[in-house]
Length: 467
Image 1 (tube, rainbow, N blue to C red):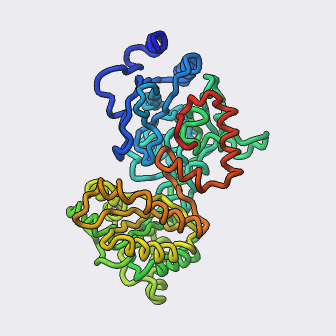
Image 2 (cartoon, rainbow, N blue to C red):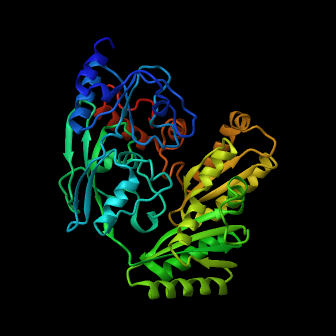
Image 3 (cartoon, rainbow, N blue to C red):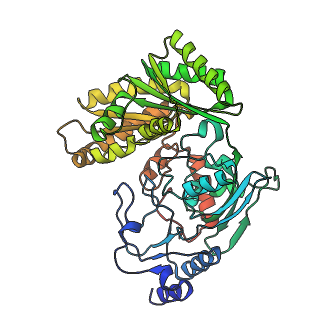
């Protein structure tokens, strides 16, 4: 290490390499579950600098942990406590390289904050639809490395579906110039899809070309109260049949989730009386306000006639729509304020969600009376955040230490029986690495390990994460 850090400093300059002072912003994950100690923090400003860093790491056998906005929830972007891992922060690489309006595409560097990418697209009269609660601080590179989903997957797909091409630095310090605005390129293996969702274990994404979409002429948002999760699923089917592709958001929130928000964030107004389940629907219409309003009102009337909806309210202006979304997006914040909890980012066939919820609620209630399930998520694409909090009076840290493994096993066993996945949009990181080994198809795991060995034989890229 005696020559590594001086060589790195010579290449990056004083501003590009942090070796002392308070590095906790880079060494501690968002949930504060995986504090670590970095050898140093490298802060490149260009792809050439990333490549130079990787060549030096390869030469000196220094493991590297890529990091974007450090908003991940599975411990995938912070160093371990060995003091040997270099954190590679991409937040200074935030140049918007190109907007091609005719091609409906945008090319941006990995450190661009998601909200800034959205704003750049909007300034060009177009829409970049990837949207999630952390969009004010998460970065495009991190979104791609974890194949982020968010609130509009139902209509536009997740990060993978929105990406046309990548620029990637390999473990050896070479640069794959895979940026492309092409929708069709049938010239062999799809390397782009290999790096998306790989959590920085195969290469460092430094830039991406992303699809843009037309801005909708009208966007309407509503909240609807449903008597059970079965009726919420039936409402989703009705909404799809009535609205088609105009249905861009379909979020579900349990009574306990909104009650938690009311306790922790009482300043947030809740427009509907408490009900077993509340659905947030969003319609993005290309035909204008009158058509969107008619579709929405017809949908909610039909749902009420069938007993799917007990009460509903349509946002009358942009501020009300934002307030509805803010209510949904405040659930994780309310949980963070309430204390540590056991998070489950799971996906299931939509038809399997009601039996899963019924089975698991009963199992957990029997396992520990008073246990609190905070259930919410993207029902439209089958993704639930099925989170578990300690009963009143039980210390949260003690609850996790004593019960997390047993509760995870019960939840993941049920997910597996019903044909679901233990990770829908958060990734594997360190949190679910051992679960992946237990539950992934063995042939699939063997193929993944073969790819890792081929691209990163020295295991320098994010070691100990994912695999």
